[in-house]
Image 1: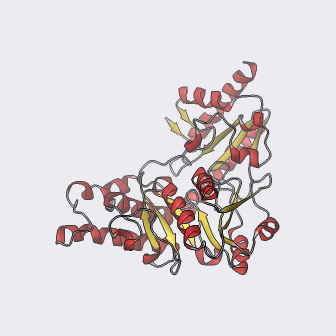
Image 2: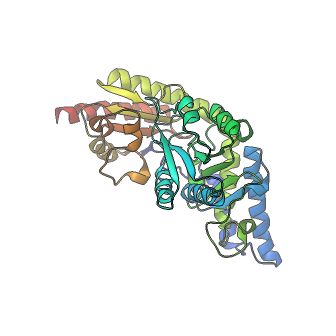
Image 3: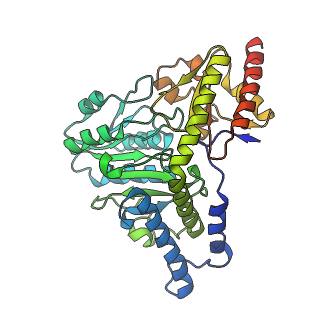
Length: 378
């Protein structure tokens, strides 16, 4: 199998599995218990918190463990808007956010909050002028994803943060695709909340974290015990937390080398696809995109058919976000960057990983050329 859908999920790294194993069958104590056996798990959780905090250059007390990016996004938006509702009820976001943000905004609208969705240009980037204009006296929070999960476009986070800081607006970013792949500068970006998910950077599924800057007045979204400083109840997923921290440690240690390699392979593949397959073109920014992400429109075909045929050839790619793969509607992200329905349905997302080889991509290109030609004749 040639796996080229790393934006959907990544394989759990061997070092990560090894780090997790003892906490399943040897050190399986509940981290909330007072005796020594439980304290071993508590120490592992706190060590993991320190590791994650170091990658972002923040305080360990500002890292809260969750079940993943969706929970982190929900917590960030719901808790912040409700906590500051006496000061305002307006939220700013974008048209290309993940459904974990978009559907949470729909929930907030039903609760009486107002939401402004900023449009994007053909590269998938928001206009700084439109952001400035959208801010109102009652604007509490802006939630703008760092890097898009479908087209890989990276926003100008520093400029966005400067505007929001100047206008006194809190800043949340969904960094599920960015964390572990590109450098993140929370202080320079003036970010108050950040969401991340372990399985996007070679950690286990079902684990993530939310960074909350010290001083934010947000409450728990899950009520129960006193875990996570009383702000996120539930018995700690110790193996998952340990694995996520190990995955973060490895990703940050190898980030520069991995990004350079993926970007080189990505750019070669984009060049060969767009020059050797008639009608194929890149969607999203050429320059400001994640190292391993390419989204290609193969005009004149149905991407869903191409994905199935590639699967028969042992090649895994996607026709959009894995979280919305069952939808019959065109991608909201691709529509937002100006594609027609027909163009949106012709797009394939290919995302490389740290173990992707040039040989795999060469084989994939040959298969793509054959299948696209066959589908166009179809």
